[in-house]
Image (cartoon, rainbow, N blue to C red; front, side):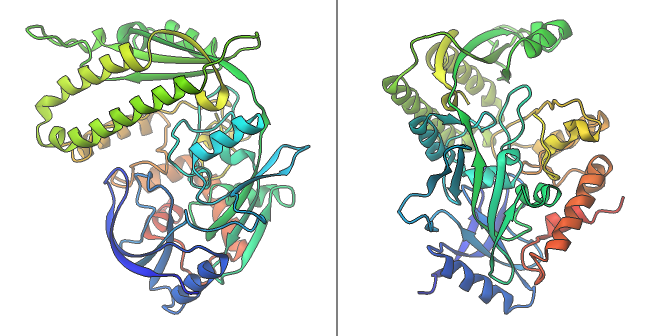
Length: 440
């Protein structure tokens, strides 16, 4: 059976990328291979890319200079002998096979059911696990690597339509390129990842003045060094009130501290998560409805930020500890294109990486100018952008990334060319070509 193709006005989840593409939802290996064969007939003039939950902000989904075929991978069936798309392949070593299309929410349920966990996992539940790995995404935790570092095998369709198996055990250096490959090696079919026994954690929410955290180095150091996992969230304008001036240092910062809990404690159960998930859905829908209004009327943003923060503080994440199993609660990396690689001790890093993310409503006036200014400051301090986030419009950014990651990028290119995975030139798009072959 042949896959159904259709034209689509594609946009990603954050609405930072738009293009007209030919899209398809293959269901079998055979359909994926037919799509690859069809694209090859155009001799490199048509590019083949994949989309999961469309959560990346960067232009990874298409080539702006070519025609594009976009594969949505969520319908592809497994060859595991059942309808399941996740399975334990080696119980002794806690190895788990995960199909493309499996969401982080699906994986969370699997971990809880089988009393396993991946410490480095992301907190979002709607993105897809294979995509998390392929784009170098990450969780939070001292001494914890990125998800890609726990992957030990991948099966990928190359540009000839062959389903190739790549193994970390067989060639560790080569696998550093495969694990976080941004679609350069082809269409990922599945991966095998190693997990650990399930652990309980104490998750503590607290709120402190911004000036007591960001303007107090000792407090910040103590907070980071005395906890296994720390996340800090700042909603600007949350200290505003009618008739009073605004001083940012009076804003409160939401702090999440997560540490292993070895005592026998009462854990949050089904009813709590059902209640919390309902609130999450309500807040997400509210943001979707108000986002365009805020973009059109930026002066309303402080009021929205204030009310959103108050809802988080007093309703959803009240101050105090709760006890959870780790997948509910939520580093450095060895993969060549993972941004966490700048912390790799083998390359002179400290073993720790600080991830900073700034978010705004889609369409916010002045957003790109703001990003260019902030990115310039961070780049001057030795930082690099997360390649799955929004960075491509930063001036001279490809060279700046290569100045910091040149050795790793060269190693990635060497392994990609050695593999001949894209010998027909259908996978790399213009964004990745400019990054990989930037002039140093």
